[in-house]
Image 1: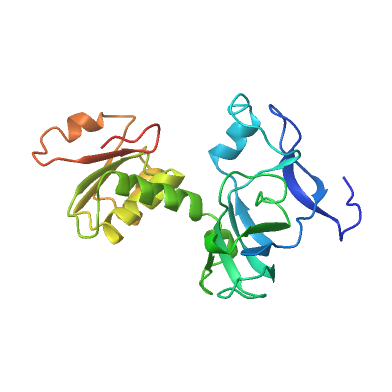
Image 2: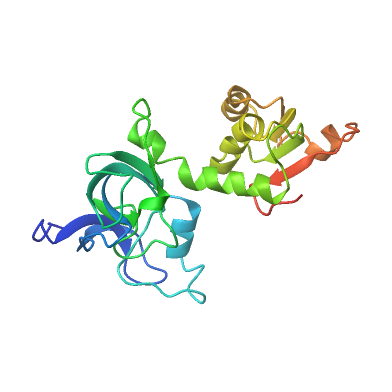
Length: 237
């Protein structure tokens, strides 16, 4: 639809009720940032399963939202204004991050502007494009929390199996297992071809084609304990 007054409305991806369809529409711009907040002009945002599953009604009996609900957790953009008390970030800084809490009207990231806590923002490296930066936060945080919940620390020397290595979280977990948590060996599951090749480039030592063989049979001869992270369903330690 055509935009109303551009100073009070903006374009965003939103839906108006549970079981609604996500559409590009006009919504009110966020209020000026309060203390500790920053207003970011979004250059790139990402959609995660949590966004489209919520729109499909999976949380309808659990949560209530302000409507229209703007979707999106992840963002990358440039700061337009800062609230009182924000000292480390400035207007014009390129930042990326993930919102605190759930997307709502005014704080979902699939919009021209989003108001977020300064604490969730990190300075974007100049060499990293916005579209790449916006793809990292939610999946990266999920992977880190999974490893930490299983007790991994730097230089762990662990042997790790990541199920679903070609997915959003899995692809990050393969990399972080070695670079951040010092895993000695990383196996993953992926279909043969493009996905398996991608996992190999990311650093997986062993790729099991889940369409041709069972990972438990392939790893049955491994005498050392393996940490299993399943990004297809739940997490098992």
